[in-house]
Length: 474
Image (cartoon, rainbow, N blue to C red; front, side, top):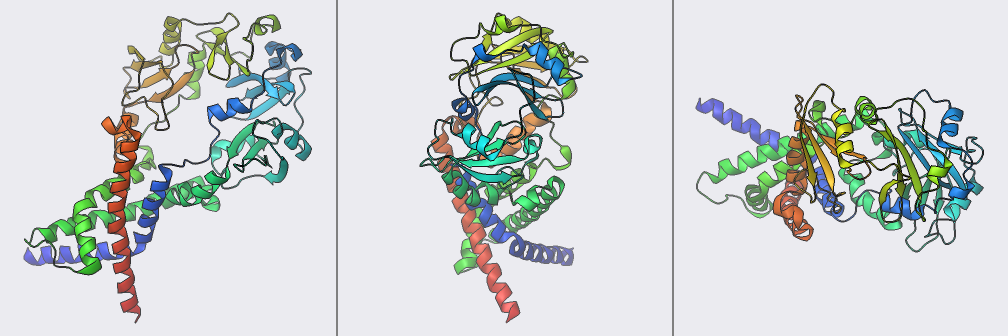
């Protein structure tokens, strides 16, 4: 038995040493980039930015009713999203198909909008409130900031610089002219050190979803094995009664590993789990069948005419047209928010009744109105939409659906596995839980301190690994 234990320790030492040599620099990069991500997120078009770029809707220029446009589009069913908004100086109906493909039809003629030209891209970008000296930067099919598959239905793009002090660049969809992304000079610079490094978001790799996922899972898994074995060895050495037998970098590695090894291991474990290995965690959005059941009407029809749409409030930026519970609903989007209009408001009870149909094989167990964030309805970037309705079902996955009680919009889906992921990822990886979730500055300080301790562990390990490799080479 003593020989077996000794051999096991030997293999544990060897495994930790060589796994650390392979992944040490990567762990250092993850820790540094994670600190950057506390303050600078990956470029995205926020709802506020989208609203700021939209001109007021010129309803007087609209000539075709929603029904006429649906007929011209030749759809087999009602669109996944149906919106009336401006494309430059022209009102346009934007149609999202069930597969996510976007189309744009003129609200004046009913014809599909022509593909965006360089001159057209400059003209559209010139209406942006931040525009100064607008210039076209050329076509883009896929680049560092549009690498993910969610942009596929909108490709290709034209990239346009606004010439403002922030160095803002817009990405406009060539098929529709839609603004899909904006980035600033600071975002682009910091993200090379932040999210691109942290997520290994190199465009040739990230463009291949399966390959990228496998690469991240394997690399983070190897780093996790290195961290776990090192933490175990550190405590085994400590149990011998002496604080540390090492000196210099080895002492730093040992003592920092004992003090912060578990923190580093939980960081690596939660990062590995964030990749949803083997699909352990359920989807965060309702599927097509759930959305169709919520709508309660699938035919490509919308009965409201231009006289009803004309009742939208002054300053409306866009009108979202939808069915909820078998009733047509028009939601007006303004600078400050969204709300039902045109005589189509739903009561909270009607929203709950429509939501009940989303899981026809399950009973509605609870319908709760949340007026404040909680452990499962939160947003690291600020306050989530409130109030919100949480519908709890008694299906095997214990699904919750979150709905906007005012507009009826579906805000999210989370089941038992998703609630587990909330603790296994957010609580462990970003410490966004409990009192820290309510005090962002304190949370950032705690994450920074934990990351600094992890950097001592990883950096000292890199130095020790480099010295060993150099000795072997010599």
